[in-house]
Length: 344
Image (cartoon, rainbow, N blue to C red):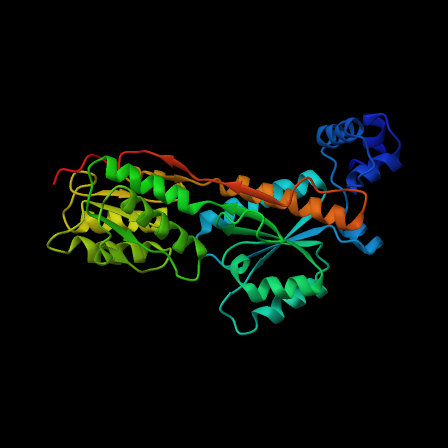
């Protein structure tokens, strides 16, 4: 037999009304009571009927994840992080992949808000960085959280989670410089992403601060994909005065760069050091494993969703104040076997 709300109430030693208030995230419930009810929910593996709950009233209990990203690892980590926060707060998750380059993207998102009855949206790049998307959602009065590259604390009125790609890229470049590398190639991601500019600026700032000349010939434009890592690395490593190190804007590109080096008969890190960014499974599935910057996409998504749900509660209950509307993460340098002391 399925577990009922009455079973949860009996387990927690409270009334069914109190269980309902906890599941509905009403702010008047004491923390001790909330914790006791949630412990009972977990112990009994109680699953609220969200569909029936949504139909019963005007309030929605669904969060939409809006994304356009070819990296399956990134999408899965984000999805799992959002889902974790939704389950903790009694919300359902709606997955909505779409094409940010579509001419009808604004209409598509408008229809999503108006017809899917979602309570809020989690926006990842590039949607979180598109002014027209932000303006449209503000006008629609829907709550949303932006996961965005940057450090603009307090600049945005919207709920945001900032990722300091600049600082992490600086650390990666500095790591290579301290190993004696003076010729460091840089493989750019897609220009539509703020992270590309932030990572490039961090790379260039580290070079300047350590007295290393910025050589534009060592900077190759591309996309966040394996093939672009291969192409970019071939271009750099085919030069007569090839770089002794390559900084790829993400791990997938770095894996492509490592593949290109092998095709050209070069050893990594003996002939060229290669570093990536994000600490995705790509960084651990290569040989040698990649030096990178650890970016916990699952935790970022989980906390972004928690912020969003807090803002939704604040909108519904004026006496409840969300503790914060912004969070900041700095990816952490992870040193592995793909980087070593420069030999030339």
